[in-house]
Image (tube, rainbow, N blue to C red; front, side):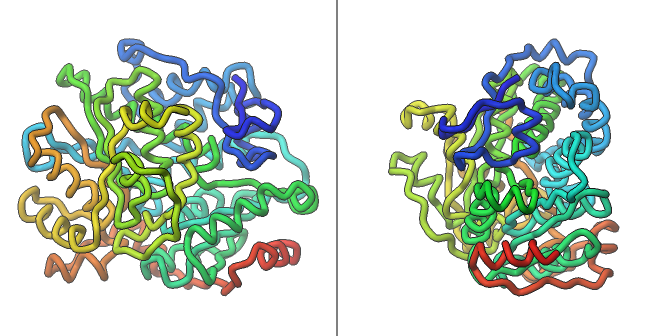
Amino acid sequence: MRARSTRGRAPATTVADAIAAGLAPDGGLYMPDDWPRRAPTEFDDDTSLPAVATRLLAPFFANGPLAAALPGICSDALAIAPPLQPFGAPGDHVLELFHGPTAAFKDYGAAFLAGCLAALPRGETPLTIVVATSGDTGAAVAAAFHGRPGFRVAILYPDGRVSPRQAHQLGCFGDNIRAFRVDGSFDDCQHIAKALLSDAAYRAEVPLGSANSISLGRLLPQAAYYAHAALRHWRATGRALGFVVPTGNLGNALACLLARRMGMPIGGIVLASNANDVLPAFFNGGDYAPRPSIATLANAMDVGAPSNFERLQWLYPDAGELRTVLRAEAVDDDAIRAAVVRTQARRGYVACPHTACAAEVLDRLRARGEPGDWAVVATAHPAKFPEVVEPLLGHPVATPPALAAMLARPSHAEAMANDADALRDRLRMW
């Protein structure tokens, strides 16, 4: 299958080449030409997450250099099936995506991307993966590429605007991983990454790749875990499952929408934003107006210019139609605090600040009489945010073994100016 830039000023290419490139030469984001539809019954023999992913994604890789490797990539990257559990009330569920090595949903996409890039032919010069992170992406990408021959990873994160444990994770790998704490916001980090990735002359000098959700290699596997969860629910109940998705850069929620476009039994999709309400403002009838991000308790969602909105506009050029396929609500810090407490008291569940945004939105939906079956998407383990969660609940949160092992390592990040040339110089000297 071919992939095209959302901006329409770059040649079409294969999905495999689009994954390798990350960003299109015209600065746009790659999207496949087609989203093949599948009936749920076609997956009757596919009960595991890797099997569902392989069948769902096979058309995108058919007759390409990754076709034969796809089952193995899915088996390695998607080995941990995310639990879909009751969420304290009839029809309410929680989909836990945080059981990977860095305790965040981004482990799935990062591992899949690393598998794809490792399976593609490349030159002798190491490929440098440049990734901007608002908290969780960087650690997931670092874990996926750590120790892989032929790859280096440069992580950019906003200094002082990730949780202490997230910051420790970002700097604890060493070897072929370097973390840079940028004097700016996540949007600034994302701007620096895009500036380098769209600089053809520099990429000829220093081969670069992307691991943000701008990469198709991150987006496609995320659709698979929504398909898997929806199929399990549909087989058990005969009903579609809606999702409330904590949303920052919009990649995770977009993946859910794409799974629905491909015929999976998914009901409504509601975006749960924090006080960075660019998306809720648009979906409630306003203009799309990116603005500087503000710091919140749900820091991994502190995004004022979500990259993947460009993909949404490419899929749905008419704003009215786009507003019919998704909804969005904003949750400020006071509501996050209240939701963390209420979710434990009423649902018996300890939520991280991001998951709490989704739990708050589900509570609002139910209060307004919203019918149907819904799943809150739990995107990170609450132990990554003890300074927020533990004082609210009045007790410690147990740390998963993999996270505890990372926190036991030494950690170091390099200070860097909010300037693309500063990163160009650092990578030249690496």
